[in-house]
Amino acid sequence: MLRPWEVQFWLEDSPGKTLHTKLINKLTTDIKSGRLTSGSMLPGTRALATKLQVNRKTVQQVYEELESQGWLVTKPRFGTFVSEDLPEQGLSERDESLVNNTKSASELVEFLYQGALCSYSGVEANNDGIPDTRLIPYQLLARTYRKVCINLSRRSNLGYSDPRGAIELRNSVRKMLSEDRYMTCTTEQVCIVRGSQMGIYLTSRILAPSKGAIVMEELCYSPARAAFESNGFKIIKCKLDHHGLNISHLREILQCNKVAGIYITPHHQYPTTVSMPMDRRLTLLELSRKYKFAVIEDDYDHEFHYQANPIPPLASLPNAENVVHIGSMSKVFAPGLRLGYISADEKFIERAAQEIVLIDRQGNSITEHVLSDLMESGEVRRHIRKTRKEYESRRNFAASEFARIFADKVSFTLPTGGMAIWVDISKLVKGNDLSNLASKDSTLNTFYTNEQVNPTHIRFGFGALTEEEITQSIRNLSHKLQLI
Ligand SMILES: Cc1ncc(COP(=O)(O)O)c(C=O)c1O
Image (cartoon, rainbow, N blue to C red; front, top):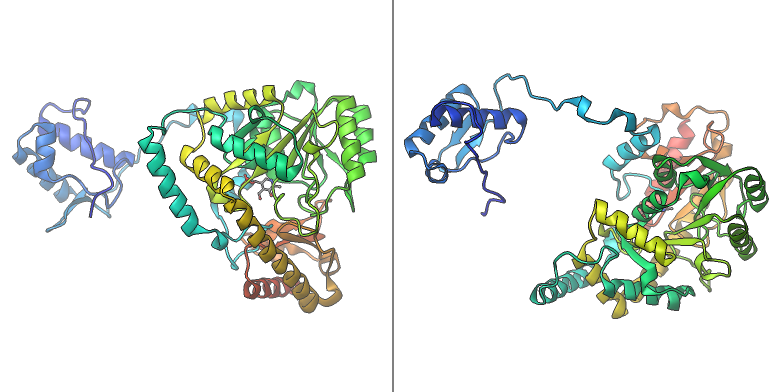
């Protein structure tokens, strides 16, 4: 089997007078610093001696000496490895003062980070509405990746390129936005990003906190709040009602505060799932023009609306000049694909691309060409049509299972789209302390309250679950909630 890498050594900077001591010191410091971890395979004595231009005997003696001290082990016919059971040592640590502590992460960022470390999938964990990555057309994707790799390398087209993304994909996205989403935009108004979250973060870098606060709904997508806060924005919470953003409250906020922008998920409000009615959309845009604030439209699950007509995004309506429209392929295919887009005014897109040059230089050209190919051949549309039916049927099944298992102990309105149901659990939870649910229980991640007391709702994600898994998951939930 091929080894992934051959470990390299540089003896010049190692302390010691002789080559023997230099090599001893080099190997032990590399082990102590963690560069060579337990189980790492070292080069053979002949190969290392040739590389370092030393006598092979010297290397053999060094290996033997380190083996006798417990740093290395030799496995006959396999080679020499860093020992699994290293001698006691004071491990070197990085100087913590090098890290800028004045910029340490907020509690929210730390919470999101810890959540991101235990990524969830399948029925074992409750989630807030992730897609089923088992549904991706992996054979088609694999074939297209193969084709794109061959074409790009033959045309010598895999170098540094436009930070706004491959022109082919920007054209395909522009076409999709205009033909499928009623939007009018040019290719210069489209920038490819790794996912909506990157689009939101870039927006928070481009808007100016000196121009005012960011308005968010009182229940909202907390990674977006964290992005705006991390770039110095004050957040003002606007009330929500059964139709989403409460426009009268927004007016009050605008009369008393400087506002730089509003972050909003009008297609299916996160987390409550309601769609914003057209009259509110139009008023919001009029207000954005009057008070000169940006409208950050996070259209994270546009493809999954189960009623006859898709709702036109804010960016397609009159007075949409200040809208920054952000979309993603995470729900269509898989979050791991990391592909999204921003559509906004050309100047805004240029600023976004300048930020990309600083943090990423550009996106992943291969994946961008693959997606463009699949969009142009109609495969993306076909996949959306197929999965939309599947998710709609899972939504209906989850709703019927909630009614069967919980009867009237919980209530909900059937969502018109998306991958989650917003379930009112207040009757069950009333007055009960939830702290007896283990803190690592992922169910807790999907509980919501707007008063920071006992949860009143749960956002139950059905998208990633088959019917059997939905039943299992709702049963698990009912056991947990009855236990309270
Ligand atoms: C409301 C909302 N916005 C943004 C995202 C992030 O999506 P992406 O994977 O495109 O970064 C999600 C993910 O589920 C989401 O629910």
